[in-house]
Length: 208
Image 1 (cartoon, rainbow, N blue to C red):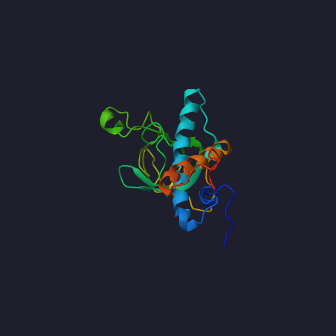
Image 2 (cartoon, rainbow, N blue to C red):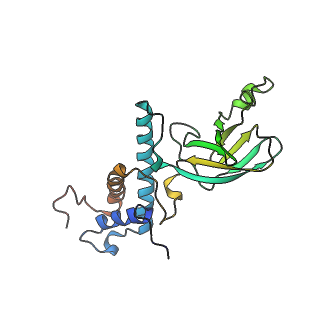
Image 3 (cartoon, rainbow, N blue to C red):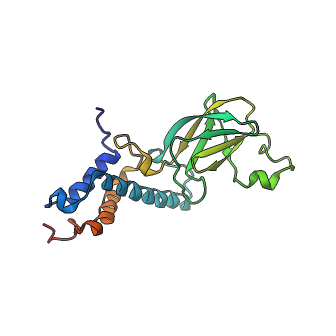
């Protein structure tokens, strides 16, 4: 069995379990690894959304690499457009599809494919704007991309995006900035504590 990454969903979930089970038996708290993992994933997603929105508000154009997942996907030619299915769902940040940061052709990494809104085709139908001035573009919908303006048949794309927390493997790298980890663990603990009747071991000196 592969060794879990030090910053993985399972490792962070174990930290939450240790906090929940401090001085108690597992039966008494009824907390499971799955409970902790799901709480970590939810707390991480909320923290990432705040983090990215704060960066954008400050005028920071680049996204930190440690929140990004990179996948290579095949875009299949459907006749009117190419369709690419992402293996996991992007996190919605500030609007539809905005968790996707970069889409490029694997055969031409220097050429980026830019996004357009889903309503773009409807708004500009018949006005010569469907190819975004001759350049290919894509519209995102959940975990699917529609790419317009590619002349090739099937092709491979490199897609960089913020993946939702619950869709990480338990033992793989859990994309999160180091400075957010402690806060996410504490938030996951706080989310589970009321359900389990556990008081905060950091703030409550009476916690057994």
